[in-house]
Image 1 (spheres, one colour):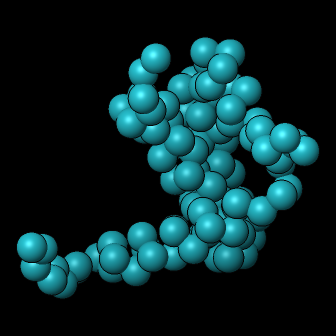
Image 2 (cartoon, helix red, strand yellow):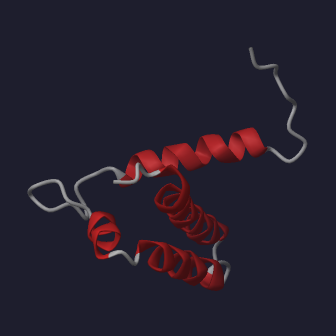
Image 3 (cartoon, helix red, strand yellow):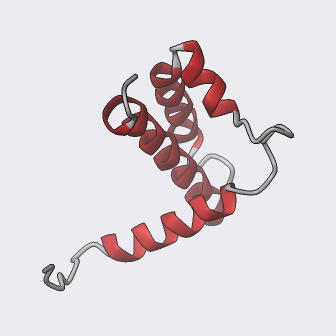
Length: 96
């Protein structure tokens, strides 16, 4: 049983917003007709970890440079998403 934790730095709210962001990415934007994502190709090629890392760095690098707080938040969410994908590839994906 988990206990309720009062997060000092709004981690619960941030994670809730992050999950809502991820849910929005599951549209048809980058999928092929046979439901393959670009991420799947990177994983199949064997270079997903560095691609996910580099893409996260790109979004961190540009965060705050577009001018609006909302754009910065979106870039940070994108960076977090690529870090999660990197964790999936390195630590959670079932190994063949």
